[in-house]
Length: 90
Image (cartoon, rainbow, N blue to C red; front, top):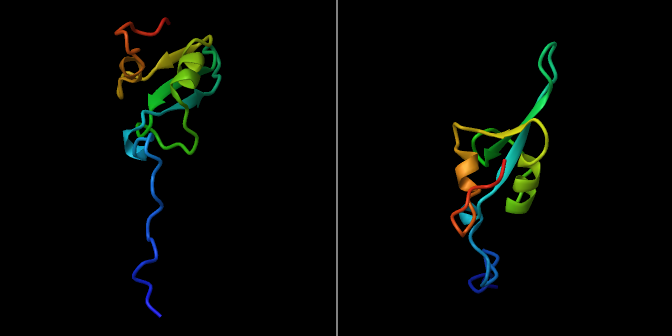
């Protein structure tokens, strides 16, 4: 019996991008310390290790929360610029 015709890769849907081409973001929760309230830092996926990714809408919503900021190392804020060229409101 030959396995020559058995597919070895799952075909991707025609309208989807390869996983590495999809933009994704992740959140880092910075704990509360005496004199400093806790905060949330938004990163482009790959900047810090994470097993939970956010899509663009989730990332924008997270960035609009109190004490949330975009990472300057991975330029997470710039990665959220809309198709119209307008930066996200922060």
